[in-house]
Image (cartoon, rainbow over all chains, first blue to last red; front, side, top):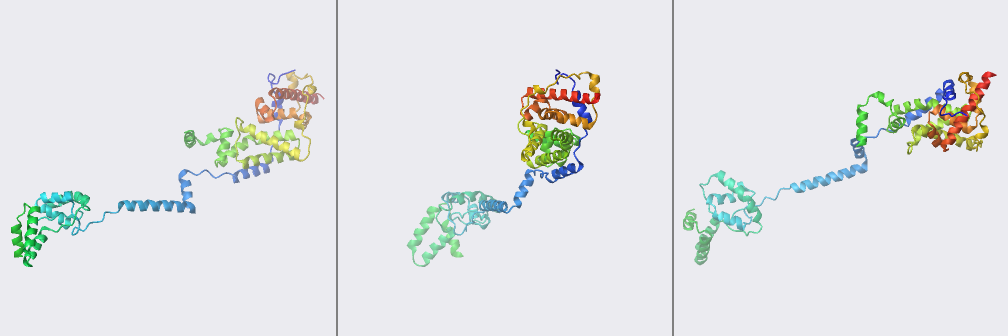
Length: 204
Length: 203
């Protein structure tokens, strides 16, 4: 008895050498053609899959909605704050104190159109000798504080307007009221020469 | 990470490396859309598979039919060999199952399912002389007749070993037969073939 493991596989080799069977050519052609036609499409990359998804209507709607929401959010967040009308804007208590302490030229800048972002300062005397550049820089510094407190402030007339009111009251026969208003103005603007300002207005 | 490595290796690999790839790698490439990978795979196994089927069925028409069905089912299935099975084992398993299905469908007696007494068919081998072995018949009809004279179980193991180049454990897995039984079947088949072919030469 021989062991196939230990004897040379002469019979196997003999059959391998003498074998002649071949699959027919038409079968080869048929199988290879079937394989070619059934070749699965190469798997697309991430970028290609994304592009294909974009071409499908349901994904188009989804992407368009997403982009729309993003646009709306960016627009909402970038909307500039409404520019206050400085003629009627309230004055903040803090800004008011600053304006009172500030030189007349600087106080004036708070009311000037150049400082459009700032809320109007409380009534301040007009001064003609201030440098415009200095006024602008101060106006920019004051703008934030004035903005922050503008809602809390009450509307106040300018000093000139109130002085004109004093003159009007005197002319219309209300000297007591005029005196009272002038006294109030002296309290509010202790550093101002109200009498000289009043005379100046009378001349005009 | 492994997919990235695979991609990089494919990117910089020379074109000839595809031909040196394993059967499993070629099948995977084909499943990913590389048609040329299938052609290499087919060229490797077409002859062995056909000869196995021809020897096992004994009829060229049936062998061709099962051969075609085997490849087409492999193309269309889209699956891969499972577990530890190699592509070669998988391919021959498909072919064997197809042939058994054909026999079952046509009511043909299934010789592979016969219970077979190995010892009863084992005759003493007196042709171990190398000189005598060299003079085995080279007549293809006699070779074929000797092969068909083998019991189907032995013939199957012999054909798998001769043409598929599967090792014995793989044949045992494929045929769902104990390894020792496979070894003895191959041994008896070789003995009988040597005897038959030598007798024919001597006569």
